[in-house]
Length: 74
Image (cartoon, rainbow, N blue to C red; front, side):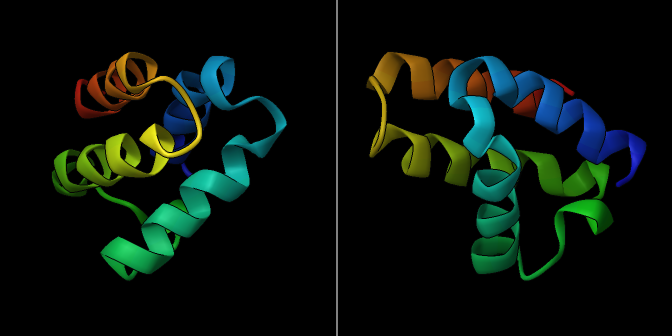
């Protein structure tokens, strides 16, 4: 993993628990066509958008928006 991916996982873990790494890896691969470890700073806004959509399917929409904002701010 990279420093950036470690920060992403740390930001998401309180919301997604043990599914955090798999969730972010799937979002990166499916929507950004990259591996989580290869993610770059300019891709964070796009990742945040997809995190809000994907997380909104499995948790409260307000919490999904909150985690997306944290990712975008990294």
